[in-house]
Image (tube, rainbow, N blue to C red; front, side):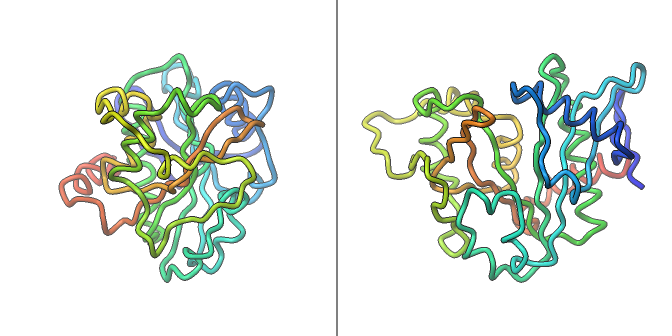
Length: 243
């Protein structure tokens, strides 16, 4: 059973309806929704990060293990992206979903501990690829022009794994011409922290964003092959994962 601490925070597996309800409540607050829950909650494992002194839930995410790409059609992301190319992926996969942090808590140790917990779970389960949807708040693509330009310029999925378009409402940012070079700092600031973390260790994204009006977000398919993580970053992640 996962139990990992860093500073004032504890990461653990959710247990029972109370933990799941608390995670759904945090997700609703983080995504600005009236409620947040779906059929995938029942088949996923859930990780929660709490402030040890008060018990306040400050971060959560859920996990869906897949034996290989052959099962990817049953993932949450497959509702929005054509993942036929990834169906040929030969190794174990782990879908990371509904990752969010408390909007009033900005301590970087929260994200570090969440990644440490994820690292321990990846090592224990032998996953070779992580994937999921990284969400931008709001549905106006114009607000993220620099971020999308940066993604198109250097972080697109390899052609052999690249997701196709499936959702009816998408932003094809890799095909959008841009007259001026992107502002690197602004582009990074526009990206959600989780996506920045993925990209920093070798992650890649789809060539388009899906407009999710139910959650009022834009999201991009995001994946990371474990073998692509730079050795120094892998060592740092395992140092946190070691507790």
